Length: 270
Image: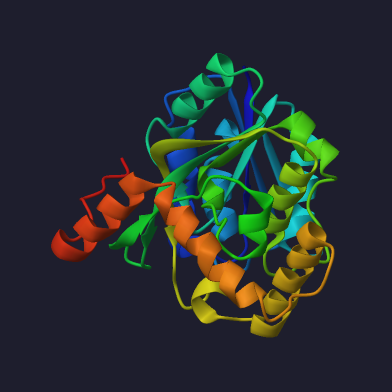
């Protein structure tokens, strides 16, 4: 079962080699790796060129932002299974082989989602991140988050969802996930830790850039699921969704308490 992984890269030279190695050093052979860069100026292209002989494709051309670059990357992909990580993130060892086993043993599943770690720009673990089981209504209330870097999906689910929304500048990954779910994709949460997500001052999440646009997108997701605008009663439903989200994940509650009391466990990428 072939997997295609895409990395979108733009001026993240500080982290890029870690991302590349985390993919190329996976213990799964039938893997093609595609890197898309619209024209970095910080030395990223030199790093990419050093690994060119191990890449299936290298696309260096202008694009209209990350979702457009991802669409271009996946247009080149030939794998049955797809995944992507940003240049400042990384996969953990054996993440790919673990995800592929789930697809092989559960042929009716379209999307598998694991958990991950949030780290700072030095690689220090901030906390563990637990993805939530998919339910469209909990997603609408902000209680359906997943760690994108630990998400793997069949090509058929990606195509049925229409790919990434190029107009979405803040949460194109969340919108794709929601569209796949609303289209009937069968989504399975797996209790494994598969990736790291880097929170730093220059990332969208870390810098809180485009806050208003992000809020508008989340209101749009609510309308996609509920077919209406939010109302006052929805503040109560939001709390119910969050409570239910954690009741469905007792291991996550245990991990949150453990991390607060003793700190998160150590993490070795390579």
